View 1 (cartoon, rainbow, N blue to C red):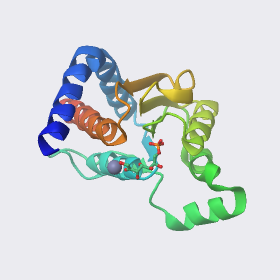
View 2: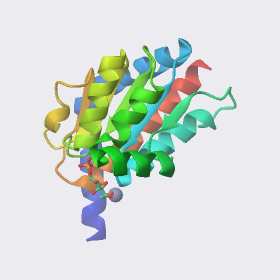
View 3: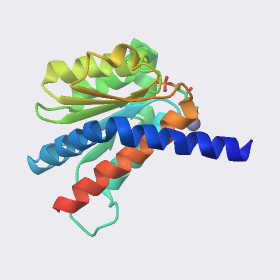
Length: 184
Ligand SMILES: O=C(CO)[C@@H](O)[C@H](O)[C@H](O)[C@H](O)COP(=O)(O)O
Ligand SMILES: [Zn+2]
C-alpha cells in the first residue's frame, strides 16, 4: 500500500508538470503583482484545505525561505469568533463570504481552495470577492466543479483523490511563495 500511494503521488506530480505549469506560472505572476501593488491575499478552504490556507498565509506574513519584509496574507479560517458568529447567525455557507465582504478591497487576491470545487462556502466567497473587485484564484481538483467559470483562474489538479489533490495544492502554494521570495 505504501509504495502504491507514493507512486500515485509521483504520477500525479508528473501530470501536474505536463498540464499545469503554465497555470501555476500565471498564479505566481498574479500573487506577485498583487503584493507589489500593496494589496493583500485572502485565502479560505475547509478541513485540510483550511490548513493549507493558513499554511500559505503564514508563509507571507512570516516568511517562506528568504529574509524579506512581512507581506499581507490572511487566512479566513482562523478567527473562531467570526466563524462561529457568522455560521450561527447567517449559516455556515456564509463564513468566508462575510469575511471577504468585511476585509477585501479592490485589487486584493482571494484564493479559494476546494478539492471538489463545489463547497458552497468557497463558491459564495468567490462571488463576494468578484463583487468587491478582487482578483480570484481557485485551487481545485476532480473536474473543477462549480469553481469553473466563477474565478479568474481555476487550477484543477487532475485527480479524483482528495488527499493527492491536497498534496498538489500545497506544492502549488509553495511554488507561489517561492515566486514571491524571488522578487523581494
Ligand atoms: O483533509 C481532508 C481529506 O483529506 C478533509 O478534511 C477535507 O478537507 C474535508 O472533507 C473538506 O470538507 C472537503 O471539502 P472540499 O475540498 O471538497 O472543498
Ligand atoms: Zn487531508
